[in-house]
Length: 75
Image 1: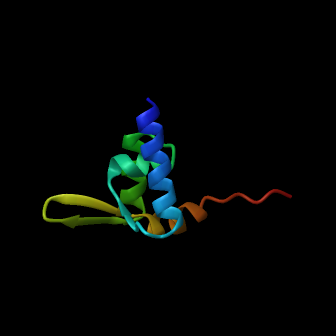
Image 2: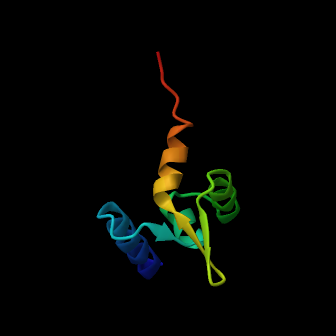
């Protein structure tokens, strides 16, 4: 369990420093604290999917922009 938490922290560091623009479904689900199926649907709805030689990569910059469309403002 500790190793998994460390891997997630390393992924977050890479993303924050913009060293990593693309993630897998599993990495994205972990990064956004969503279930795998939910993240897959989110990526498809955002049109953030790239297929490279049988590998699926998700552009997190597109995901971030898409997520902003759900922002609710309070009065």
